Amino acid sequence: MNAEPDQTHAAFRHIVRMEGVQKYFGAVHALRNIDLAIGRNEIVGLIGDNGAGKSTLIKVLTGVIQPSSGRIYVRDQEINLASHSVGHAHALSIETVYQDKSLGEKQPLWRNFFVGRQITNRFGFINIREEKRIAQDILLNTIGFRGVGIGVDSNVKQLSGGERQGIAIGRAMHFNSDLIILDEPTVALAVKEVRKVLDFVRRIKASGRACIYIEHNLAHVHEVADRLLVLDRGEIVADVAPKDMTVPELTEFLINLQHNR
Ligand SMILES: Nc1ncnc2c1ncn2[C@@H]1O[C@H](COP(=O)(O)OP(=O)(O)OP(=O)(O)O)[C@@H](O)[C@H]1O
Ligand SMILES: [Mg+2]
View (cartoon, protein in one colour):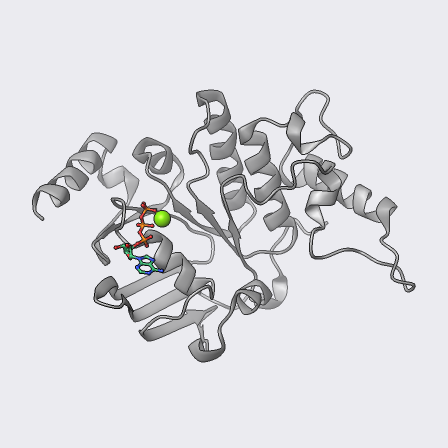
């Protein structure tokens, strides 16, 4: 099925690029002159203390809020920030996976894949058979779900935390997202579940897509990211490859940032 990103977008270099992006909330300078570029098949970890500006950066990118100034490019094309919106970001194949909340607890799995994008026949009826077939394909092929006893008719309630993240990531991958944003996907998960989520992140990479991965747990993000961006008080203060900085070094770097305030 849609395991490959849309080939019509094949010619771009960066899935997103920001130039001089600023965001003020009244007197709070939440983003300071942000310059960044995310390659088309890069997993970029976004780290930094509470209040550093990580969520704000993502919100600006995904059209939730408007920046105060600056430019944003998607697939090397500048976007009009005045008309950027959540719907527009979606249309540009940018998808955010939020911690847990995005799945309907009481619904069977297959229904969760089609919230907001039902497959209907010409009379407007939902094509349940087709939706189940696609859901099954996503489970097996996109995210490689081999969980015992879990199928498209399973209830979300039966899934572990890591599996839920997998469903949300698989949904994003299937619906042709070229950039998948993960906001702390391993929060409150047991070790075994964390391993599953990190595997899903690797699948994003293997499928040729890009990912921005916000994470407080440095060991987790260090393990899967190609590059780590450190935000501090609204500013990008480091851009490093995990191989050039160990987890203890990174931890010390972040602690020093706090001490220098
Ligand atoms: N809607 C808002 N109105 C006013 N100030 C805001 C708003 N959203 C964020 N801020 C401020 O902007 C700064 C950056 O916040 P942001 O939520 O982006 O941080 P974060 O890095 O995501 O933190 P955390 O790790 O706690 O999620 C903080 O000082 C925060 O208080
Ligand atoms: Mg945040």
